[in-house]
Amino acid sequence: DADVTQTPRNRITKTGKRIMLECSQTKGHDRMYWYRQDPGLGLQLIYYSFDVKDINKGEISDGYSVSRQAQAKFSLSLESAIPNQTALYFCATRGTGGGNEQFFGPGTRLTVL
Amino acid sequence: EDQVTQSPEALRLQEGESSSLNCSYTVSGLRGLFWYRQDPGKGPEFLFTLYSAGEEKEKERLKATLTKKESFLHITAPKPEDSATYLCAVQAARGGATNKLIFGTGTLLAVQP
Image (cartoon, rainbow over all chains, first blue to last red; front, top):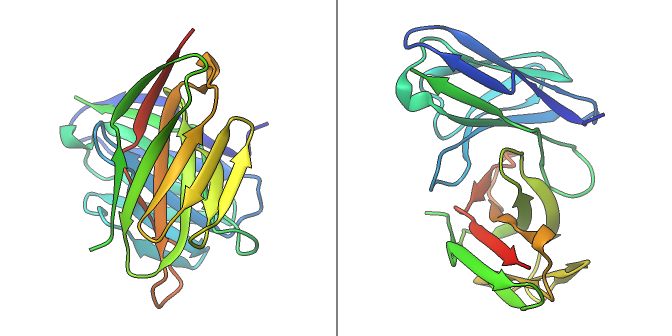
C-alpha cells in the first residue's frame, strides 16, 4: 500500500463550489505539505504543517484553507473554487529525523469549470 | 531571491546515449539539493539529496553531482524506462524551522528505443 494517499484522484467541479482534497499518510511523519503544479511552473507551496497544532501559509495560500485532523491526515479546501485553481495538487510528508527529503502522494487532478 | 533553473526544458535521447541534465540555483545558504523523478499523472518520486559541493550520489544509471552553483544529473546508457520529467529542488538554510523546497520547472526526458 502507498505511504501517502490522496483522495479523490480526479475531480471536476464548477465555479463557486466548495471542495475538499484529502491526504493520509502511514509514514509516521510529523510534517505535511500541500503543493499545486501547473504546466510550465514549478511546484508551488500552498500550506504546510509541522504538527497537529501548527499550520503555516505557503507562497500561494489565497483562496485555500487547510485542516490537520490528526498526525496522519491533512486536508486542503477550496472555499469557492475558480477556474484558475485548475491544477494538479500534491500532498507531501517529511519526517523530523534523517534527511530533509519530502515524499509525495499520487496527486489530485482538479478541474474547475 | 532564491531561484532554481533547469535546462534543457526537454531532451530526447536514443537508448544508450548518455547525457546530463542541469540544475542551476541561487539560494542564500544551501541546506540541501534534491532530485525527483515524475512520471505522467504521478507524484514526484525522490531520487537523491546532496548537501555540499563535491558530493556525488548514484543510483543505477543515474549520478547526481553538486557544485556551489549547480547540480548535474548524469544519465549513463539510458533506457526507455528512464523517460520522465526530472525535477530539481533546493532548500535554503534560513533561520527558522521551515523546510520549504523551491522547485525548478523540470526537464522532460524522452529515451527512444
